[in-house]
Length: 263
Length: 259
Image (tube, rainbow over all chains, first blue to last red; front, side):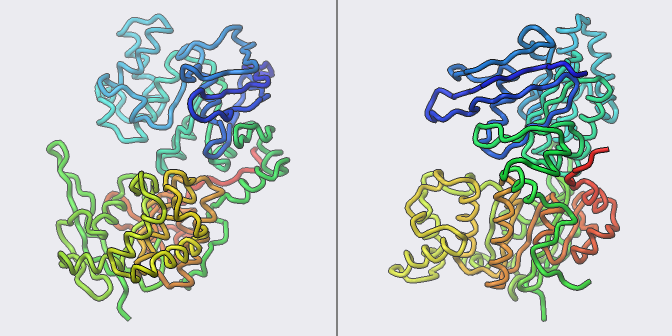
């Protein structure tokens, strides 16, 4: 799996209204077929603009410069068919008026040419794959009847329903609590491995990404700061910014900021 | 010495679509003066409901709270308003927590005026002092809150909270929406304020790593119950309850050597 899935050269995006500054500024980046790539950045880094550009979801009037090629496909990717997209907030990305079964089956029906009946069977199977308890009952439920973590599982099932080659997850775990977040990351990791999908995992949390991706690309203020294999970026960051980001990470082994009460 | 805050057997139910949901089930905790208690738990564990009851934003069904020597839930009207100065809040989303049209100066002037902290002619000086205290400058007073970055806004929220010289700060996911590089500096500011002014904190978060950084003791909630309390180091090293074990296991670690 060494082919290039998507190739960006001097790729820039400027939103038309108000702010004249580029949201992405001359990015050179290759997404390799079958790799798991994390796009890391803080507020205003351009990471979500990149996700939208890949998915063709930039708003009207956004100015795009440079090149974006899809050598593996030979054409711009079709939403749902060639890529699936998991958004941050499953409360707004799912249709409140459709049952869970309908929204998952829709992609399978449209892109795999299945009838509703078979598509719903596939939806139930997918709910099982995203480890949803009682998939047959959930099929008939509506989004408001599920918890945030469950809704995100449904959104993932819908995103992969048509067996896309690429999965884009834009801060897909940021609205969830840490326990649920860890479960969703495990789930994404497993699905991507089993199906050989290419994953673009967009997050502000470098530690979260470091646990399961192959490569990391760090963005800051619309620029690509550095990109490389997880191990080399984390152990020997080329940029000071990446070093600061790594140093800012806190886990349970980080010394606390206070003197603790004696047990 | 009796604790600054003592919450005893608080229960609260909500009814939703005909179903009765128990948000809090006999929850008790104490906080000593100058102490930080980290309250940690997953979504729906009841931690935010507890903070809202504590702040008298919603009522509870049963239980009692003693704060600063008074029966906190019995206080009403002017007495409650007066006493609120002693317990202040910092919310998760600092933009939603401010009047969008306000300037930093007016945000800080309000509590000083309402609670009569300093005389009118001394307020600009006090505002400048508060801004410096949270790592901003006196010039920030003229800027609209909207024009600030997320980290600066949260500093203003902290300045507003300490303006009334409280003895307890309630921080509900106060650093969760901030970038990691900014988050570290806000945590340092909180610890610093606590050391210098002896303010006690109830620090609420779903992220045990952040809670651990600033808390003397940690309380773990799950499904509306308090399932574990103890020194932060002990809970991190040897969590007893299933909920605490899950929270410990879920903290992402930097993996520099993927296998």
